[in-house]
Amino acid sequence: MICDMPKLMLSLDGVVLREVALTKERTTVGRRSHNDVVIDNLAVSGEHAVIFSSGEETYLEDLGSTNGTTINGQPIKKHRLRSGDVIEVGKYRIRYVVDGAVSDNGVDIDTSQPLGREFYGPGPDTIQVRLPGAGVDEAQGGAVVKILSGPNEGRELALVKALTTVGRPGQQVAVITRRPTGYFIAHVEGDEFPSVNGTSLGSAAHPLNDKDVIELAGVKMEFSNPALR
Image (cartoon, rainbow, N blue to C red; front, top):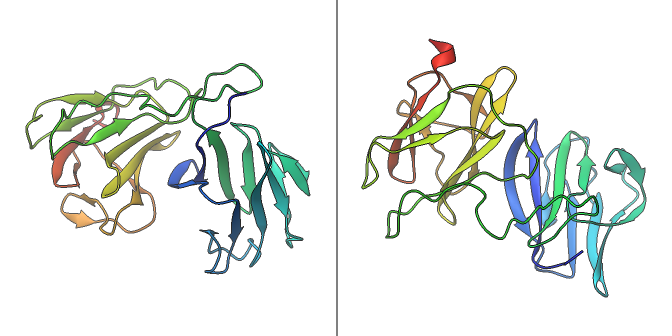
């Protein structure tokens, strides 16, 4: 397996909360604020686990946490990470991903390029639309996001994946998640939360209704789901 540019994708209840690039030799995970990946939940120990490099390999080691750490459903003390491994800490899931990697089962999980479309065009108002997470199920519906403002007004993005990330990296990013109960939007990155129908969202996932208007990174877009009509 090719190893390059590893990162962690932290999620809760299917919603990607943030991505963390592994730029250090040691990356700590835990509830206390001094950790590199802080998970403020009582099921997570103060210093829960550490991810570290040894030669060309990357390992995760549980630091004697109260509730333990599992990888791909199996309790571990120390584990050599492979791209695509899913770490579970409390109710949180952390996917270990390596750009340009192919997992041991042969599934291409290259994340070095957007998996969706970048349809806002070049320029200062560019908003990237990515469909992260190889192997997610195709949606069986007709939900779309239609751009209402900016140079790409009128264009549409079909929400055909379980996760669709929208926003301007480094400024404001949100994720639209398809669940059995409907579609939800959640804040991922940025000092300001996206808004729905003029109301700023908090940190929790917010359900989307047909014709809801989302404002993100200065662009307005309309969520449309014929199944809700």
